[in-house]
Length: 191
Image (cartoon, rainbow, N blue to C red; front, side, top):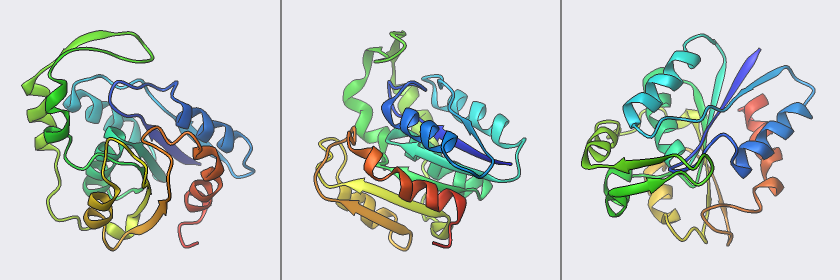
């Protein structure tokens, strides 16, 4: 049985819109697929350790990461070799999230915590310089993302399978229109 892991973004949760869309698509699929989407800790090292523990128990894994979850998926793909789908992935969150240092509240769980320079240091340590597993990556990015520049992602993942969608936004509210492409890749990455 293949494990599909959805990795949510910064201040998000397992209850996010894209996680729900993917879970519904998996339930509607005829192939045996197992879905896992944890509420990740806000500390990057703890989040990655949580993901690695579960992933290590399965042979066939596909990671689907959105925003910061795409950053984690990139790191895990390089480290463990599993395939991944990246949706509007963060490229350098150790830089981009520096403006968020201070009090934070998770949008879904309402957990309050202090986002610190230690968070940024942990994120920086997860940066993979020189990607070597581009053949295992499917990048999906919207041109209307107001937080992350799609052109930066296209350059970073040059050589990977890519789908650039005109318009939309960072939340990718029309993701449901594209979930069949994600599922096709999950089931048969040669498509």
